[in-house]
Length: 425
Image (cartoon, rainbow, N blue to C red; front, side, top):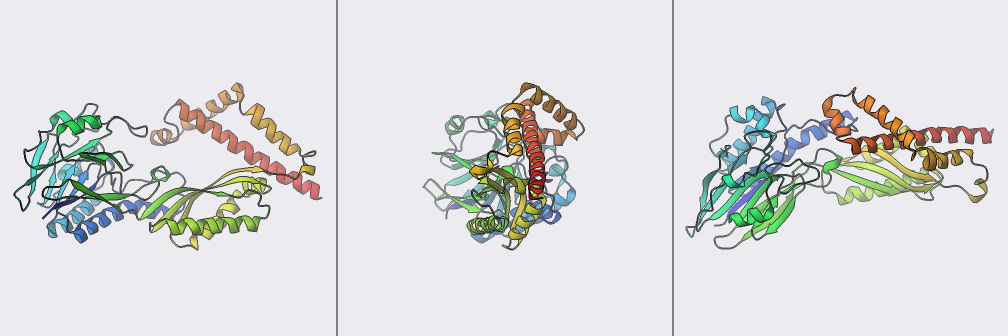
C-alpha cells in the first residue's frame, strides 16, 4: 500500500478583506467565507481520496485577530479527518505564531502540531516494512530572519522522509524573507519531499527530490489571481513521489481586458463586453469568477466611457450577473479617443489632453506637488491602509501619478461632454 497525502498551506482562515474595491456587500461576504469553503473542500478531497494524511505547511490563520470562532471551525474540520482515520500534520507559519488560540485550542488526537523545535514523527509503515517519517518545525515568533534548516534532524536511513517548512526560500518580491534557505540547501539535506509554505503561488522548485511550494488554496484579492489548489502526493513502496494538482478555489480573481477599438456605439460596446465575459466565464472552473475588467483601445467612445463611468460599471455588473457566478470587482479604463480626420482641426479638448500628457504630467514641479498631496492624504489613513496603498517611495510616486492621470482624464471627459453639447446647440 502506498503512502498518500495532501499538501497545502497558507489558508489564512477568515482573513479580512484586503481589496478596497470590494464595495458590493454580497461579493464581500462571498470572499470572506471563501477561505472556510477552501478548507471544507480540502477535507472533502482527503476523505474522498482516502489519503493517509493532510500536511498544512503554515499560516492556517491570519495573525493575532484570529477569533475562537475561527479556531472552532478549524477543529470541526480536523475532527472530520480524525473520524475518517486521516492524520493531520501542521507547522505554524509567521501568521500562526501571532495567534494565541493556536496554542490553546484542543485538537483531535490524530492532529500533530510541530513545535518550535524540530521533531520527526513516524507516519506509516508500508507493506514492505519501509517507514514514512514527517519532519517539521514551527515558527516560534512572527519573524524568522535565519534559516530553520539546521534544526532539522537528518533523514531516517532506509525510510521515506518528508520535511515541512514555512519559508520564503531565497526571496520573493512579494514576500519578506522568512526562514530563508536555498533549493540546493534543501536538496543536500537528503529528504524525499519538501512540503513548503509561505509564498502564495504554487511552484515545483525541484523534482529530485520534489521541493514544492504549495501556494494558497484560495485567493483573497486580485493580487492572488487565478484558480488555486492543493497537491496530492503518492509514495509507492519503492518508487519516487507522484504529484497530482487538484483545484480547490470556490472563487477565482482574474484580470481581464476587452478591446473596444473602433466601436462608436454604446450598445455595440456592451455587446462586445457581453461576448467577452461569456467566453471567460466558460473557461474558469471556479464557482465564482471575480473580474477586474479593463476596457482598452482607441474608440470614439473614450470620453463618454470615462464621463459616464458609474453608468458603464452598472451596465457591466448587470451583464456579469446574468452569467451566473460572475462578478465585477471594478472596471478600469485604458481607452484613447479616436476622431475622424476632419475633426482634428478643431478639437480644443484634444489639444488640452496632449498638453497635459506631454508637458504637465512629466514635469518635475507637478510630480513633486502631487507626491506631497498624496503623502498628506495617506497620513490620514490607518497604518495598514497606508502600507497597502504605498509601501515605499516608489509605490507612492506610482500612486500619485496614477491618480493624476485618472483625475486629468476625468476632467477632460467632462470638458469634452460640454464641448460636444455646445457644438450640438
